[in-house]
Length: 304
Image (cartoon, rainbow, N blue to C red; front, top):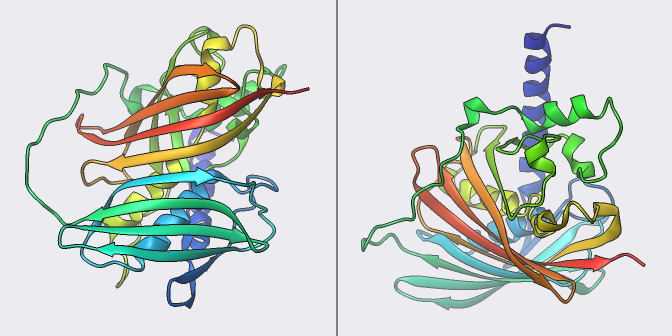
């Protein structure tokens, strides 16, 4: 099979994977302020945190009009079971002239597994500046992570590599530090990766393309994030040595964005202690515009 044919098949599978995610994110209204969500099956028995972030964002968006999400602050309370649907309950905290606030609780088996406060704002003018994008290779200079991981799987397994590296994701990913390379395997504090949604970002009568883009960014903001805090310790610790989980997550969206275009997901870690690690990321578009920020604290507990 030629390389061109392989790339065509991979593109088709990626687009199908993106469409499956959009179907999962399309919540079913149950009652006023109540929505039911299904789950992805690709990530195993536990629900991926990014899916819950994205669904909770869309649930909140279903209760507002003519405003856009500018920040969210969430806690992951219990592991979610991917075999059971998730109920999202939205509380209308405040409807102001400029800002609107919602609280969303995700429920399974009668218990909260996640809660989130989200703030929306009308479009306004003001100061405009942004930290410059770091000097990294552009996406067309890098290789697709899934392709590289598939090639590496033909040899001995590297214990530092995530099991998710070989799973088809709804986002194409191109790491600045190529998987398996000497630079990738060294101890470091940062992990810049270009990402792009593999399908078309939808729009409908109630949710615009920008709404979907912001919800999809919430999904992407949890991809390979907590593991960033392990990078300074790669020479002495492998993934199997640790229990990892997202604890809390904060996202700020600074400017309009397009998820079907390349975004630099510039991940880095600042500290780890007490079995917790703190990670941050900045998002830039290909023109160098600073479009979003995210911070997360995650569990890094040594396995018994």
